[in-house]
Length: 430
Image (cartoon, rainbow, N blue to C red; front, side):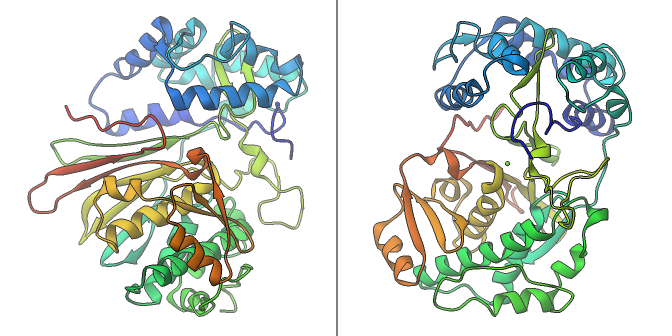
């Protein structure tokens, strides 16, 4: 699958999800909810440091394609001939108008009206496959989350086609191994190996749930997770997927004084997504189709009306059927690994949300290769290397995910939040 352009564009779901969430849970008029975003698009906002870095990377990425269907990205997002720098004020009247249409129509304009016509026309003009009838047939789906038990808590994730199953498999493997080792190196080694085993299963099996060869229940069965855990020894393994039959974004968390808590995530995938901006609308289309396989035998094979393996996953923790809090880690394929790391840090290492997010991170990339942040302790890196891990230190932390967490104290109701030090996050009480 191509990474950019119109070919990997699938039907955008975010505007429909906004309207559906507002209708089911909201207290304010839908038009009022989008007013702050409209104001920012109209009047502009000062670009933050990390955003400017990612913006520059996108400019370089799409610049390799020349003009054609990508020309409007540069007109819209680099109007002065270059991506805005940190502190520059960027605005988009087109985006403001589009948001007004979405607000005034409860998102119907995006799927049924003039915005749908504009996306259809641009797609036809440049050889894309997205059509108005595809947009018209879209409906948000309410799904039942999936969970595993970990250290006395229930950890909840979105079901396939989301990649939350990877998180639950990794935590389920760790839970089946019993109490975490008090040896820091052994504990870290187990978490890495469990995450690797969950990830190779996820990449091999996760797709649209109705198209999966195996069920979520099979992949989270206690027997199967114990079999996977038995593969973890003293040395690093080169993981391959198992067979239970025989045996990635913007994330926000919020809470209010009534006890409502929300774990919310949405994404264009890989920064600005496809690199396609629909002229006159400010609509920047995602490229989720890139995750499809072109191998017709693969569970995640491209097919009409099918949703691909999806990286974005909001997480949630409960205990004794009471909400503990939302958590999430942005960052494409880093997300499940980030989830495992912050959950184990909070529930096993007893760190508060901010300390859990501050911890130096690791990232499995392939085989026995583990990338670690520049401030990852040298003595731990050397100890892991002695166990067979191929440790690679990475200078830039931007690829190690960006998370937010809110936890509620079960007795007092006091909320504590943590925000990501690797990006421009914030904890905002009001």
